[in-house]
Image 1 (cartoon, rainbow, N blue to C red):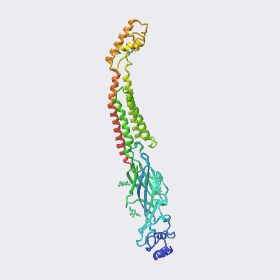
Image 2 (spheres, helix red, strand yellow):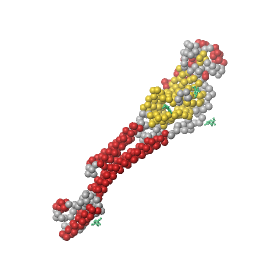
Image 3 (cartoon, helix red, strand yellow):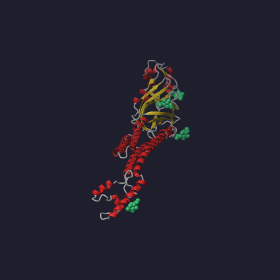
Image 4 (cartoon, helix red, strand yellow):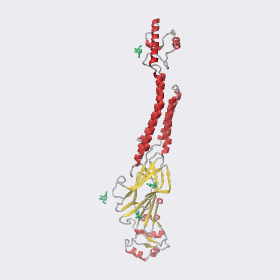
Length: 453
Ligand SMILES: *[C@@H]1O[C@H](CO)[C@@H](O)[C@H](O)[C@H]1NC(C)=O
Ligand SMILES: *[C@@H]1O[C@H](CO)[C@@H](O)[C@H](O)[C@H]1NC(C)=O
Ligand SMILES: *[C@@H]1O[C@H](CO)[C@@H](O)[C@H](O)[C@H]1NC(C)=O
Ligand SMILES: *[C@@H]1O[C@H](CO)[C@@H](O)[C@H](O)[C@H]1NC(C)=O
């Protein structure tokens, strides 16, 4: 070691004896045989180099970030794992050397703690996956005193998404870095202009993370709560895999809703078929929704998702209710407004029916049915033949009147079915159209105007 020192040229030795500041800008000369460790040992010798002192009054640090991998644990989470290299470059005039072009740079990995490095602090909403270990650091010193400091970090960012329009939102992941103890006037971070501030590694891997936009900039009061500390910020904007949501939510939902509309095309009397269609659609929809919901963040403001689920459920339930109502009307052949019986086609009860009932009731064939008894409640077994005649005629008369005046509920039921055939799909189409225009186009476009936050 000592030998090396004497091999340095006479000027620098003299300089070392005189004063450190005087020779800080001069090149230390070394012979070709010196290893980079020997040179560095000399350069950072505590007698000539104090690693606690900044290289100059205001140290300018050029920063750039290289993205190595982007991933998200699952499709609908707001957590993104970002792995990146942070390059910091600055000049330290005390580290200039001249080894006659032997080394392009000195590898200062082992001297890391004996060289001044900026106290860069990350402001993130999230955690680093592992603490900074020596293995994640590299340091190189160029002959002109340029120091390249590289660290590899992996951070799990908690991003901001507008869950109101989930899954059409674009989660935004900002993070910043600033000097923890040096004010602007002492240490100044700047985005590198020689290379893009933020760049992709050629090996960039993306898993479930779709970067749509990136920005680099300077912090303002939204990013840091402290004044006058130099601070840089990065904004990564991701988007969600829309095709996943279409295949997992929207297409199955649409299929189930429209299949519940098939019920309108079936006969009113096809009770098992129509009930089965309605109930199956509803159960399937619940299962699909629940299984999907279990993957979502448990928050209440999933407005777009809730709206979709709610409206789909409403249509399925409404089509089931429609069938129940139609079927009820269809079977309800007696009009409560009229005190008489009536057949589905508005015909009066046949004689056979009276006869049958009469037998079972052990009354004469012409005996009145229960309906007739309603007309004349007083008519019991002891009633006179005349009374029977009167009530019977009365009943027939009323019956005829009704079949003429009112084509009644069964027809209404058929009409409702006919209208529903058209009305339900049209309403659902209008809803779906409005939904996608609003959430996928209008509100997403408004979101895009987000500035660096
Ligand atoms: C930092 O970037 C500026 C230009 O933006 C450049 O003049 C300067 O030399 C760079 N410093 C280092 C250490 O690379
Ligand atoms: C960042 O955005 C610029 C354009 O704004 C683009 O050229 C660059 O590729 C983007 N970088 C990454 C890592 O996506
Ligand atoms: C920031 O610096 C300016 C002048 O450079 C000074 O007036 C101001 O008080 C400083 N702010 C803080 C928070 O230190
Ligand atoms: C039905 O019959 C009852 C008693 O016979 C009578 O009071 C009532 O007005 C009738 N209703 C209609 C709508 O004719």
